[in-house]
Length: 96
Image (cartoon, rainbow, N blue to C red; front, top):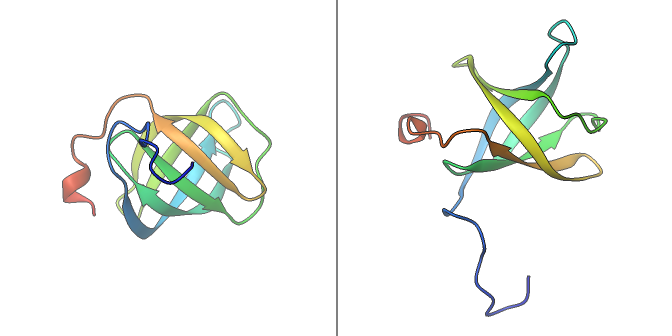
C-alpha cells in the first residue's frame, strides 16, 4: 500500500504474539501450529511453522483459551497468511 492511501480494512489491527492452531475441517482434526501476529475483530495475520496448502475449510483455534472459529484464507505468502473470520469476534477485547 502506498503512503497516504486509505487502509481498506474494516477495523484496525492489534499486534499480538498469541499462539494458535489452524485446523483443517474434515481432515480428522489435523492442525498446524501458528503465531497470531496481528488481530482485529474481522481477521488476523498468521505466521505458520510450516506452509499450509491453501484450503477452503479452516478453523483458527486460539491457545491456550481453546476458542475455535471458522476462517477464510484471504492471502498466503510463504509461511504467512491473512485470514478473515466468518463472523466478527465480539469477544476479542477480552482476549488481547
